[in-house]
Length: 434
Image (cartoon, rainbow, N blue to C red; front, side, top):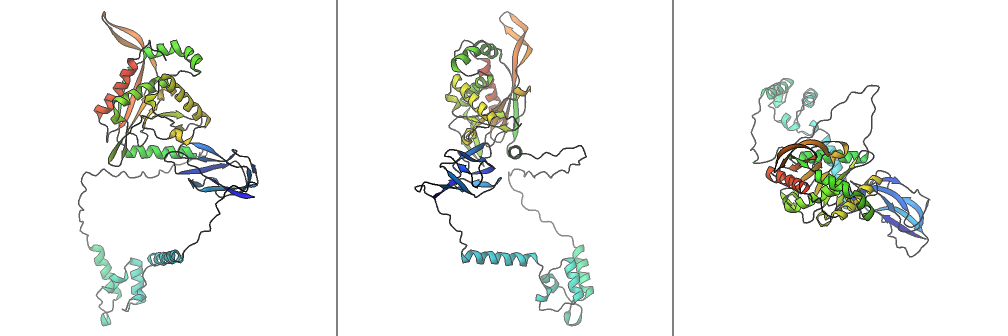
């Protein structure tokens, strides 16, 4: 028999830890190779962790909801193959120096926590004076500096009461500290609000992902100076072209053609034209991203949000973009995304029009500096300019809502970028092939 250590593997770029959400196998259960043993979750996706060997689960080193670091051993599997190498479990030895330091810290904590004893002083103080000093929070050093009027300079009741009266009547002089230069204001955390409940109210605990999303949204608003630009786009040509080719497209490519890949294609082109929208902020430095990786915000069946990423989106044609959008969107709904699928985004697009919204003001996905919201496509009356004159016609229009980080993106850049996206959409070639 041999013991195999099941470790938490690398879960993707910049993922250093994961939370155990469920044990699929219990101690004593038989496990086949590649069979899932437990479910883990990173800050973005949930994944099943399979066993590399066949055997019996003999030990679970972590419980549900425990946080595990990449490379840590999660479980022990007993196998029948002697050649399986297992790292012996090392006993943690605490050196004598560490124990001594810990003892010193404990003694220091106790000495700080307990008030200084007045018996340590070489001067004599009556029990009454000591009690008054303790009640008024007077330290031993202060008590020793009080001039006593009693015999041999002893501090009397009147002396300490006079000291307390004098101390309380002194108005401290406020010394104005030098003001920091060009420092951003500190945003204090909001105080929790007490909510009153009645008998008909229902208390619902946030799930893990909702808590993470809430934290990300608050942090983004506190980090970035959000500014929005809006522009209305005529997408009549795109609607007509899609209606004309969507059946042929699906038969030939085996994929449904939605509007999303068409919009993603335009965004990728605009990012190539305006590379300073494809950046990240790290403290006081700007990182200009080499690759254009588009995040596409997707709503999950449980109402939560996830942002899978289309890597190197500018290098994909429309067919490739459609396949990537459908693949990521489908796996997101089924909960089959891998950690790498949500990493490395440089700019994000969210389709608020899916739920009927005309436009929105999305929150930036940190550390990116921009996010584009796609509004619902609507039939609206519009002025159409022709060589023969202007007339009113029915057009298919939508709003693009661009949120950007005003710390590093000014209105000229933010507005020009979303205008360029609109130009690509309005200039769509109705005679193009896939």
